[in-house]
Length: 406
Image (cartoon, rainbow, N blue to C red):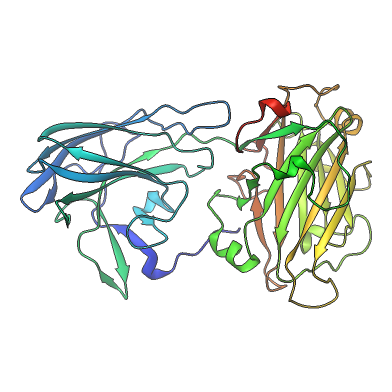
C-alpha cells in the first residue's frame, strides 16, 4: 500500500539483463561494456551487502573497481542510486539526467590513465530502505557525453522512444535491511499539550514518513496531500511525547466516539513496544477530530480493544472538518505516561538516556475519501501494520547528545 507509480516517460530500463556471477551478492553483466572507441570490464563492488549509515552507526564506504580501455582523461560522475525494482532490472528516476532523489549519492571522478580504476562512494544514507542499490557511471570526454553502445545501461523512455546512451550500470548490489533509527530528545519542561507545535523540541529536524511497505519516498502522495508527513519524539521522566504534522487539503474525520474504527478512514497511529518480538505492545490512534482508539496486545495481533490507556492527545486544525476541501492540514501532540508503557510492554522504568524502544508511526489517509493509502516511519516490509521485525528503533537521548537530524 502506498507505492508510487512512475510515469512512463520517467522510467529508465537496464537494456541488457544481468547474468549470474561468482558472487551471489552481486548482479553483473558478464561481458564488456562498450562505448565509442572505449570499453569497461572486470567490475567489482563491495563490501556486500552494503550497510547504510544509521544514527550512531557509520556505514562502511562502498569500493567500486573496474578496468577501462580508451577512457584516459575522461571525467565521470559515479553514483549510488536506489532502484524502484532492481530485481526486474528496471531503474526509475524522477527526472532526465541525474535523479532528483535525496537518497542518491554522486561523486565526481577522473580517469587519469587506463587500467584498473578504484573509487570510493559514501555508504547509503540513514533514509535508505531500498533492498538493492544500483551503481551507475556517467562519462564525458571534454564536454561530450559518452553513450553506451553495448552492455547494461539505463535509457530514458519518452513517448515509447529510447534515448540512446544513458548511463553505464556497473552493477546491482544488495543493501543490508534495517529499521529507521530516530531519537527522542529529553525536555526540561513538560510539553503543553495543545496540538500546536511551538515547543523547542518540535523545532529540530523531523523524521519523514515513507511508503508503508517498501520505504520509498512518497512523492506522488505527498504532492496530493500538500507536503510530507513529519513526526518528532521527546521525553521527560513522566512521559514519552510524539508530535506529527499532517498536510491535508481535505480534513476528513467521520468517527466521533472513542474506539470507533478510525483505521478504516483517516488516522495518525503510534505503535509502542519494548522490543520487536511482537509481544506486549500498544496501539494508539487519533483522528483530526481528536477521537482516540487504543488497544493492548499481550500477544501478536491478540488484542484487547476494550482497554483504555491513560494517554492524552491534542490536535490543531488548519481548516474545517465539516466542509469538503479547502483545508491545509492538522498537527497533533500525544503524551504517553511511562507508568502505562512500562506496565503493558517490556519497556523498563524509570526511563534513562541511552534506552531504546521500538515504535512505528503510520498515517492513514483517503485523498479522495474512497481509496485508503498509508505512510510509515519505518517500512513494515510485510503487508501488516503489526509487523515488528523492522519497526523503528527509538533512542532516548539528552538534548545535548541529540544528533543533527533523524
